[in-house]
Amino acid sequence: MSTSAGWDRPRTSLYTDHYELTMLQGALQSGAAHRKSVFEAFARRLPDGRRYGIVAGTGRLLEGIVNFRFGDPELDYLRRTKVVNDQTLEYLADYSFSGDIWGYPEGEAYFPNSPVLIVESTFAEACILETYLLSVLNHDCAIASAASRMISAAGTRPCIEMGSRRTHEESAAAAARAAVIAGFDSTSNLEAGLRYGLKTVGTAAHSFTLLHDTEREAFEAQIAAFGPDTSLLVDTYDVETAVRTAVDLAGDKLGAVRLDSGDLVAQAQWVRQLLDELGNDRTKIVVTSDLDEFAIAALASAPVDSYGVGTSLVTGSGAPTASMVYKLVSRTDDTGDFISVAKAAKNKASKGGRKYALRKLNERGTATAEIVGVGHHPEDDGNDRPLLEQFVKNGELLPGWTGPEGVQRARRRHAETMRELPAVVNRLQRGEAAIPTIYEED
Image (cartoon, rainbow, N blue to C red; front, side):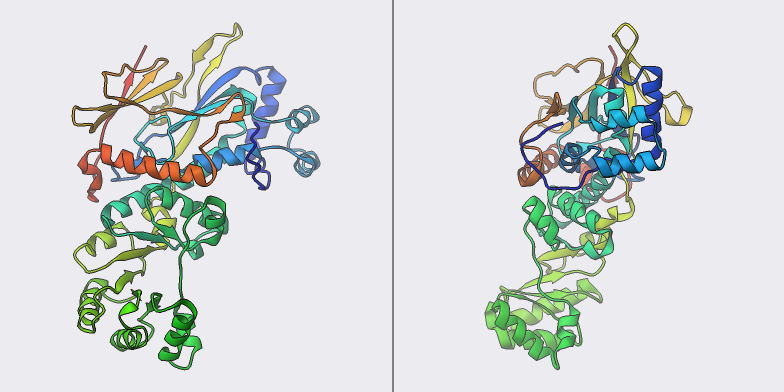
């Protein structure tokens, strides 16, 4: 797989499980490794009580597949530890994905059994991508799905992603990216800002106030460094005293005050009243402190201007994985003809055959069903919307899906798909998927 984008990232080929390579060795031994194959990534179900999911991570995945190569360090390790034999090492030394990849664009809603990603290649090329592919999609889709619910609860009030210290450093950058795709305004993570062109924000923590002899001195220093329109953290000691000090120092140009503890609803109400009485009716109130979509919804009636969300976001708000699986659904036989294949276990049955997906819309443009054609394109009755886009063709990464451009494209897609879904998706109460997934057989 090639690209002209030139990401300077480590190789991703060993972000995989041991058995991916032993399967490759077995397939090379049997002669089946080069059979043309179709793999599909999908979720059999949504997290308990959720009504929809949001696709994220595809752009990161595509960037990673560019670097899914086996150089001397990787090959030496596999040889030294006897993971695979010399024949397999020889194959891996020349590995580069050369097939096609289709899928739901990032930002798109998905439902149970939606064919979120389709990989068409040889068995050998597609099989060894499984673990890396699922690790990216399961994490990023979980974060984006949680973020989307938070954005829905926040309404027009912006949300800030600030969960970096609650997760792995690489997961933090990925979570920031997924959150912005789902509608978050900005992130505190600078690496995500650099990689993906995201807006980054931040001012000061409690330690900055504690560093100084008095809260007044801390506020004076911050205002001197950043101007009166900065955001001052006012709950290190006494909130009322801090608000009065902030207004005394910054005047009516004070940008915002941040509340990070206590009863945020009650506190925001009387802080708003105090600010107004002091002539600071344009000073905003930012709230943080272990927020999730339910806490954000509870603050809807409070005079809050924006939300900072950390732990709950980067852990998927109780659903840290999207439970995606990656299954072989079609392959060629000895004559070169494609045949459908599927796991038949009762509790984990899969549907064989290459899939094509359509979002069925009513006359008002509202989604009513996910139609998945098995082996054929579902019929469009005039205003329906095909869901699959091509990302990679003959190993070449198609433009527009990665980097900062890909993030903004995905952000627009999320806004569009949410307008299209039925209003039930905005409910935080437990319920079934907002629309059914219906298979159309040949």
